[in-house]
Amino acid sequence: MKQLTLSIPNAQGTITQIQGPKDFPTGGLEGYGTNLIQLVINLLFVIGIIMALVFIIYSGIQWAISGGDKQKLQNARNRLIYSIVGLIVVAIAFAIINIIVTLFAGNPKFFLNTP
Image (cartoon, rainbow, N blue to C red):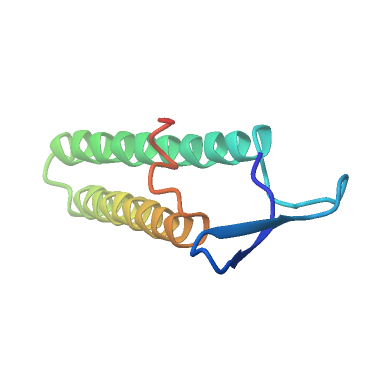
């Protein structure tokens, strides 16, 4: 368990850590809280990627069966563009959250489920 400590260098050059009082709340999410947040974020990213890929495939099929109808072709093109933009937004959101977690929590392997 991580605890909030105060580190003071002493005369010998080593660091003396001063622990907080016993039964004093240290804050932070340990164990289940971190795992739950990690699971929810990963699940949202997977759902977003799957939805974008399904819509890309669906718009490709609609494009192929449009039969030269300009309105159907335009609808399929718009859906394809929006799907690709959605996939890019999901990738950028993943990168931003990963950067924020690395900067504030100091855990660059947050999304990799490795110890």
